[in-house]
Image (cartoon, rainbow, N blue to C red; front, side, top):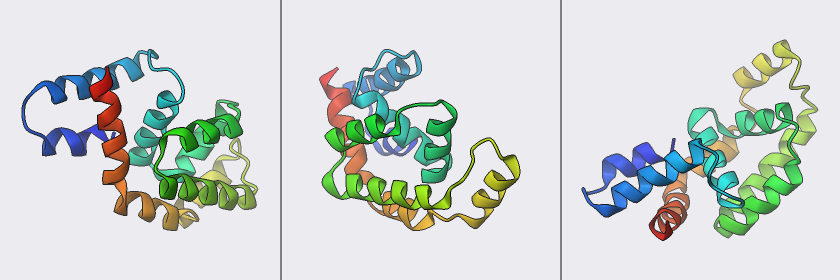
Length: 137
């Protein structure tokens, strides 16, 4: 989760409590849209990148366009553009999330790695958005 980076880089205090509370609320399903989608995105980026994010959305039969719209509401503009480009590239893969062999091959090939790198290089911007949200709780 993105909280590890923030948690270990922060000083003790109220911000830590709010940061932890935000993630606890997310895990309990108590965070509404669009921040639920943003927290899910950050969590899955930490776990496996854009490919995992899109595969999980497909397996859950979520409306990916609603998820992308929610992300556009909360992400900094460059991050939102990165997710949109990653989604376009993911669609071009024509990957069946139920085909384990194809998924394993895609995970090895890392076809969305350029978008994952952008996320990693600009993660602090996203964490600032999450921190501001946590402080609003």
